Length: 97
Length: 130
Length: 118
Image (tube, rainbow over all chains, first blue to last red; front, side, top):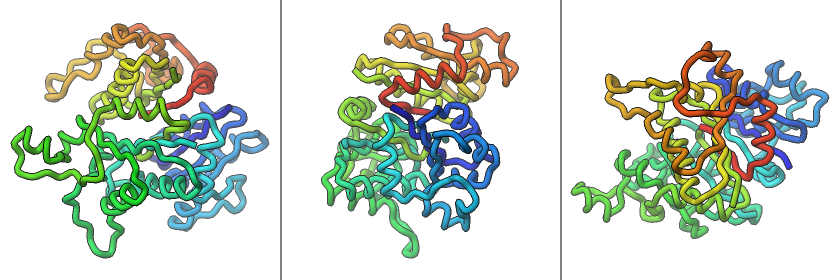
């Protein structure tokens, strides 16, 4: 059983991503949504998930709108249907503001 | 699965309400049951019947009302949050002697007990716009 | 009965989040759910004693905290790292809270059916 961490704020605005990274546990997943996708190229995120069994996703619509991509990162793109599936696959979720 | 949503954000200010609406539609499309939509704090502005949107923007208030009606969803606005933000149904408008009711009729006004009830009866509760 | 965990991450007064989360905690307590109330990040400021909001014309958010005990909410935790990062380690707290670290918070979350963070 695991947790889906939902980060919706820019890492330069709030400590949402920082807190998420301190609480994420093996087997958990992270999804970046809204301004949360501004973290997509951040090394602290990449280093935290690299070589672990923590999966990280970013909502495709939010990336495209902001002219961002996950190219060169270990972050996977998710659409709304995948977001719903992620919620169902994890026991609980935390929305960080 | 049985899913409930808690919406904290007003439409038009931050993206949270739009994300919640898209998520809700995707969950329904995937065959999940939405047990309840609970609108809390600024989220109650989604239930405003008097909002008028510019023609070149998506009317989120209307989009929620349509989704709720089409799928017969249970949509509750928190009474304490709603009253102080001027979201009143006809009963509350009469009780507090206000000259207009502003709650879109597809929503109901109730208390946080309905949020607890949603926690008890749902497999997942997801928060948006925190 | 469900296990509901609440992450209080916002300071008092600057927004309504502290009060909004407390109201959720008290409502869940009325329905006799298992509640874990964790104060971390700026949320640790909610626990400082001697808050006086009179000059703000706002209600004292901390005034309701001692009532948690009456509602049977006794699993109250405080992230010591957040307290230290804010230079508050020697400050008097309004209610007893069990000191905890990130490892312990992770396991509290893993045991939860639902988590709410404000």
